[in-house]
Length: 151
Image (cartoon, rainbow, N blue to C red; front, side, top):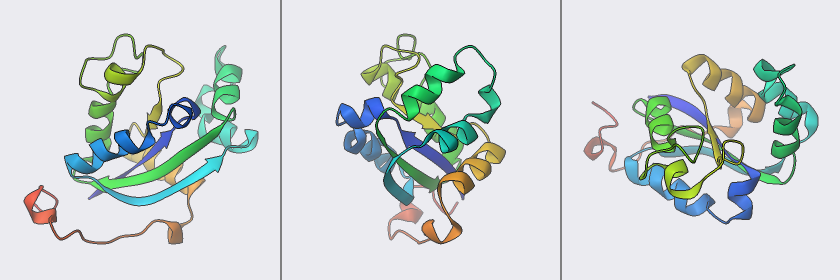
């Protein structure tokens, strides 16, 4: 099992798309291990996007992620990082393939609705920023053997 962080960004929350996008991940076979609504302060935004510090778009990125509430969560499942990133589509919604989250709901590079961890190391770092170990719940779903969760 693999875990990944997802952030339903302020544009996703404001457009009321969180539930329909989360349902896609669940229908694929991933399970929710943690989920919360949060207003991001600047310090957390800067820690989350630390690898972009000093880049020309950094301030805009911080302004965006702190500009409204987000829903942040941990998804768990077989190859969760790859599955989520594939389902999200290209970072630029205008270039994202139809059928992906961004291809269906976004036409922007910055307002691209959702963040997903890009590697196991990033996922571990990001999950630890947003959740305490007690916040992330491990459990078994009854239908797991039917969706490839225990292969």
